Image (cartoon, rainbow, N blue to C red):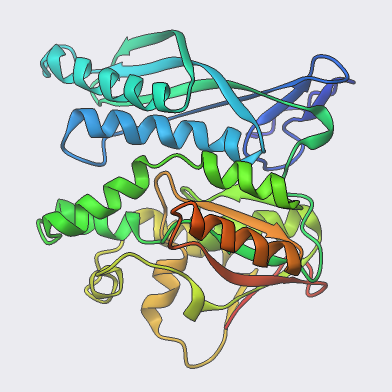
Length: 319
């Protein structure tokens, strides 16, 4: 991270040595804490909804590690001179609503005056030191399950352009505000090898991190990847967020697309997500069981989107 020296400590289970979703520190032989922080600018017009999405997004890192979030602190940047304080109040109420749903206790926070509004959380969770789920455990033969559809970045871009209908936006908002808690619990019940949540780097960016950390390759079956309605339409219109282009450029040498796939597909698979789903790597038999449990629990869009292969290591083939 920016050339900083790596920090080592006998109780540090997950630190800066590799790109993972959160830090993990062992307190006792039976207990470790998970720590993460995330905040961003508004992506929807309604302040309370923005607060809910920001909290769901911040908590997701803990769920991806297999942990239970316990406490949180608000992180706020607010333009007090140009925006009414009632907007901030609604954001914080929305955030508190989502924390209560997650059984997370708000214990404090910090705010600064800024020209641009931003909101999020620092989060502390707990987990058994021997049950930490990272990006490093994917094994050849594993199946890859994605729990939420893709397309939030593209549809939010369409929303800013006044092209996304209310019903389209409402559906995407429901998914962004939905916690990844159930998927996290179920994946641990059946036996998970590796996991990450899909956020700013898009599906292929985060899958690439998992492949590199696990020293494996991956195949993504594009036809099986769930996407929100109208995502393809907006992508073909060129309504692509700037982060998509940066994601593609960064991963250009490690992702290979099979011939004959439509051009818009690359934009969708690299689309930066906000509060996206979990990408879960687990054995084939466990994947079948998990998928059935996810569907039964209401995660209807969860799908097997690919598999883990032995080689080429660190590379993703999209078919």
